[in-house]
Image 1 (cartoon, rainbow, N blue to C red):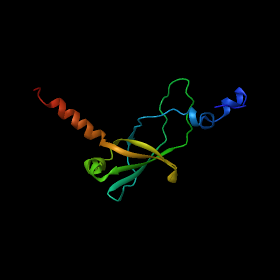
Image 2: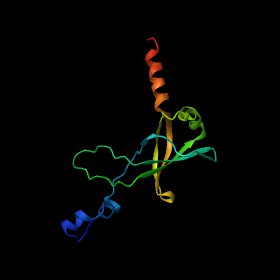
Image 3: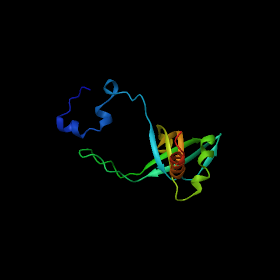
Image 4: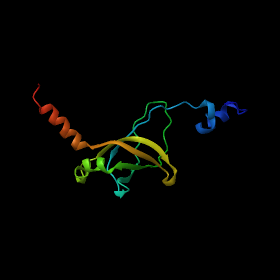
Length: 138
């Protein structure tokens, strides 16, 4: 990007203004993992939708700017078939969903939409792991 901005002004520019057009890289694969409790469950057109919100910021590597403390909202889209596999398990208030999916900006609700590719729960995952270790070697 060609600009007449001073070096100090360049440091103050938002990244989205400093890198545009031909300067953009290409993400060929994107995947997001959410771990937590679902909000209200809405069934619509053969799929399940819920919203989740994150307020925690993990420890980040030294040198990275700290993200804002604004909560991040996620609209989660889960197929009915996937939901049936976790529906009973997630009724346990001590359990949590583990959702992997494709993230996409959802400007309609100021959230990140996550289109679920796989879903399980922490307890279902632990049971599966335990069942595998309990099997005798073949």
